[in-house]
Length: 297
Image (cartoon, rainbow, N blue to C red):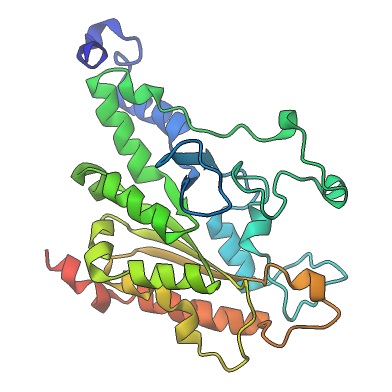
């Protein structure tokens, strides 16, 4: 392509020192959390066209690191209607206005408008798609920008099908430099089993470049009080073979518990129990013995 052969001497950007270009690229396409979905992944998501990926930049007030710290240290601002012994912020609440494809639980609704079931005005919705045009500016910029894109951003997936197709679409260089991922695991049976089925060694090895994992578990449905912790977090335990350096695990509250607050569901976990299960998985994922297959290579 002609643009990829563009003479670097004619580009003001390429004449800048490499350190300055690196700073600019990081500001433009780096250090974000990017929500990704494949549009046929969910029956309630109307696809723009078959097999189409959609993405948006996260607009949540908290980073996943900050959310993990708050989860472990305790929530300082708990509403009077909540029980501090049980309450933990659901992932879907923290990311309530991030994703334009989410309408099933009234995202893009303000608190006042939600009661009247009126959507947030289009003008008020976040416009948060990342422009990747710089990747096609020229060959040198493509190489430098791709490196920033894959090594500094965290890609977030809420269903296993989207992650599987996404990874299969990457070339070997992209897989190698793809370094940070966020997975949202619902306890809804179909989604839960989908994650467990996907995270087998043959697929996990495609994630060999991953060094940072943020995991969020969504307690969509109550489980019996004696349901084992290991079973709850099992779907992602296969990632133990990765040489992970940073892991956060957060167990969010039940998505629909507010509607039955007066009759506390027996399966709603206390915060302490959620922390225990989260830390069990986090410790397992950071166990260097599990990553020996990659360390040996």
